Length: 347
Image (tube, rainbow, N blue to C red):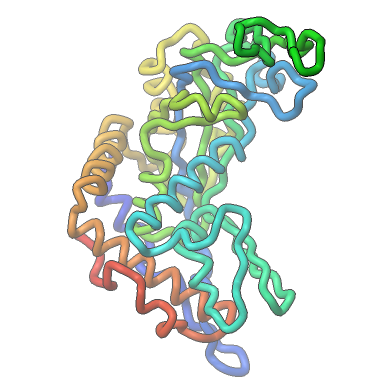
């Protein structure tokens, strides 16, 4: 297997490039042939509600010979995009725009809205000049599909709303009993999902990759209404793999065709790692990948100086790219509040 240093050696050190038209302009770095894939095994550790509309019990899809639970990409990407923004806000170097409410004020550079998070997850902002500022995501999320069949993993819970002070269902004001009686169908704890995150084009720097790994994190609150009940999904990285071109195994359906529905999470991670190890010429084992993420989390929480310098460098690169690309300016005057100061990336 390869090491993280092997992977880091393949990553670009810049996000932008100069391009000659009538004059020399700055554009996003031109993509090169490369595919990095992060296969994830997500395990529910508490009941989780997964449906796309009220008429559905649970969203499912026929994949690899059976009906399985389907968690659409936005249900995981949205959580991790918000977590990434929260990290940048904590460090004071980004997250200045609310999710899905990005707006570029007049006479302000785009870097007051877009940041390192935008590089990874994409965004679109409106401006006072009626302009639209779109950014394509560098990370492509697949849907997360359950290993187990849907029929085995659904739990029905009877609920009754409108319970009043006396513990009953009679509403004294309206003189009638509450009819707010319903059943919620949730996914049981212990359900395993496979999902892939794909990065193509050799566009992601080390700073951006480390930020992505921190945004994915270790666990979180996912789903619909159950997202308010607390942490319900644990994420395990089944390694990191890369090569010049994409492979079919990146699709969850291709992975699921080879998995045992009765395995544990640990066994599933091993199976997924074996599949990707056979398909890609380079890869980092699940254990090493997990240790790297855990170390990143520890360094972030401890305020590691090298990591903060790395974040400052990445934030400045992203700001310079967006300002030059959308307006032809550097926006340096408006970025004086950015911290920490730009510095050489950590070794």
